[in-house]
Image 1 (cartoon, rainbow over the protein chains, first blue to last red):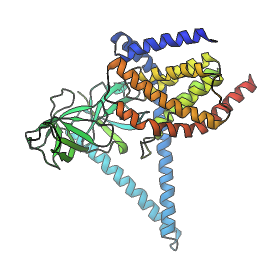
Image 2 (image 1 turned 120 degrees about the vertical axis):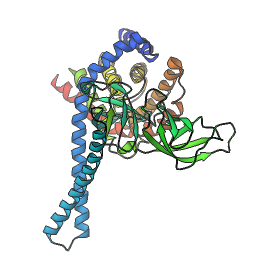
Image 3 (image 1 turned 45 degrees about the vertical axis):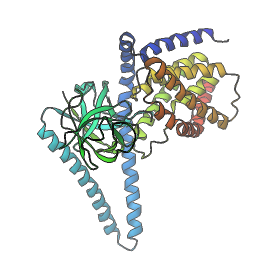
Image 4 (image 1 turned 90 degrees about the vertical axis):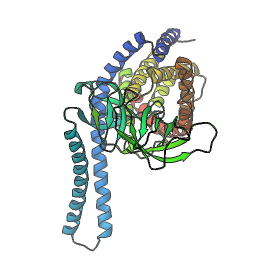
Length: 266
Length: 163
């Protein structure tokens, strides 16, 4: 054994970390402070890197568009090519503008309660479904705040660091949302599966539920506000054993393509 | 100085991992870019450098993950300890053998995470999800380690020549 001291130190740290994993408050408190200090360095780095990657992506998109335009309009004059390129850029601006207008209109209906944030990253492991936004405790974000888009529910804030916050998306395996079927007297628990589809659980086979029904939050879980649209039922299986139906739900949001989100201040 | 440089590389790689993969449409493959760095410092550098680098990479990765408190930190530090025990016992002569060990360590990390979840919190909810991604992650991490290894080796050679 060449490095007994290093091994002893590592084992001690591992033991402390084990207690952190068991959610022992004393250890978690200290560990959170340690993580916060690392996040002060890493948070701005993520925002910067996001801007660089966003810029690179825009340049690549522009290049791809330019190549396509050249292929399609090989015989046209340079002026026309420039105009078409400009047109494409305008279309992109229009889409962005529409998206931002939607967010703005939503914010105007809910004044002083919403904070718009930009998605800067995602969970480093694909074991969990989490997105990272560019607003944190510097914008008074706190745990359990609801995160939405004009289309529907995204998830909840699980950690707010100084420069960024982590959002647990509703398709994470640790996520559960109390929902009811819009227009019907049926309630259930919507659980994440770690995949694109969600599972609506504890709905009895005799309960009213049809494919195409929309789900909204019930507010009974005390985390999510009442009435937020969540997703749509895509399959219902009542043939299996047991008293509950097997129901698949597709969320309204495509969590892989989110660019901006809104955090509801409590 | 050496540890600081590897910590910086680790933080940059973790940030890259979190920022870039938002734009890529697939999530079936997700590499762990911090792992090749931990293995490199554990296998080839002084153990104290390995310990410091593992601690910082573990913490940084946890900052960018919704994993339960301490879980990624725990697995990263355990991997460092395992690598330390395997030092001088495994034969890493080419970047391909290094890539092979990176893949193996990703699989070990997944099982360590599952074991920790079970023992510390009795949590079995995410077990299938972790197992589902283990092999693709191992393959992709192994592949990308072929590019990470020359980078960290280059840094090491530059530092040694200056020292």
